[in-house]
Image (cartoon, rainbow, N blue to C red; front, side, top):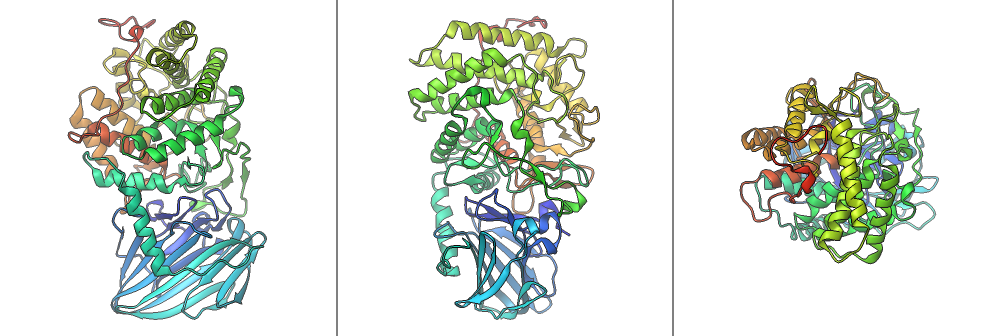
Length: 612
């Protein structure tokens, strides 16, 4: 059985990533890319589906672990009856092929160590053919070949490779696992020690550009490192998470594949990167965005593959029992075919932000933005599936309309603030029309709150973004009423739920954890309202949910006191960075980008709730 989600640490090479548990077992690894079939899939089943455990022979969980400085080199230590041992895990910067390096180091006394390597390709379904070749073990199945090198004697039994040895104080024993296409020659052997040194230098060089100097720096830096680890280096695309089908509700069906790139993450991610000094990564993410969305704006998708691939069919891996019996296990994501109106606004907002921040833009980028606005002119009043990717009937979701307004607003601002040209008077009229429609149809006068969708009584945590995107100021009574309604009705044990899952709107059985990004959004809103103490208390509580090495999954189940959902989740670490900046009381680079409100959205006195 897999460990708790929060028991896993991440190692990666900015092409793919592995999850290492406190028992010393790598239970999840996809090679050669994040979205490749897993060769270790015990995370979604058990040891029969592939894993690599390297730890004291007596078993047990490590006594302590940490990342080495500001790197992704993991150090786990066990204290046994006979001594203390450390296992060092890393994925070095990719050269000829992807490698996993593990070094066992004797700290004190003598400790019996066991390595258990069980490779199972294609998400635990395919057993490889293993043979000895040139001083290494080669495991081959179809297009995949994995090479395993270590000075320790290995034996094979029960379709598993074992290495049993004793390590003494001062000794270091290396293991290297390397993937290669099966039709190519064996990859060159690498030095494990040199690879660790190279990995440490690589992360140190990358972190040297970090300019964040606000409060909670350790937490912010760890989140930025995690975002870098979730970046697919060849294209600049950032995956939502390293995993698929970790449940939002243990034993439930809300299990999705997050190893792809979502457009709506664009603005938040760009903010986190740009204002922490990582302009190269921000530029690469912006360029990925431009390539992915190029073409007919009506064919914009909500998510794409790592290289901008459009076809991401979803199927169920029926042979996997799922994490803690959470079925089905899904590969791919059918939400790729949904119409989610907010995405057009997210893309336009992200491109506006990059131009505002000084990243170079060209005429082609502006032409793309104009074509996206033209689509919004025709489609903004259509129902959609919302940012939460509901699998029930489409609705006129309030947040989606707000983001359509954002898209048009950013186009208007671009013309007003630059020498670029466009039909700005027409866009201003459209902006005002959408704004009035949202204020009229998305607002419940009786309850004093905006609602999840037109005509409903339900709430939606995405409404917390109203003041942050500049739709209305935080002081507007309608926004204040919405914030208070979310606090009353969507908070469970101090954390914000996305929406009420019991009313059937999303077409799925009820039940899920608290979506962590939503609670960060509430902390931001409380800050905008001047309630800094409450905002900081909430933020500190969110930080306390991180595991021992600073990682967050998608959600948190306050009843079980456990992380749930895919991990580590970019959409949890990005708002951590942005909220820390907003709440910091010192630091030259703190503070969120200021969103000015159009004149029609800031009327004097108490606004007319039936219009702008």
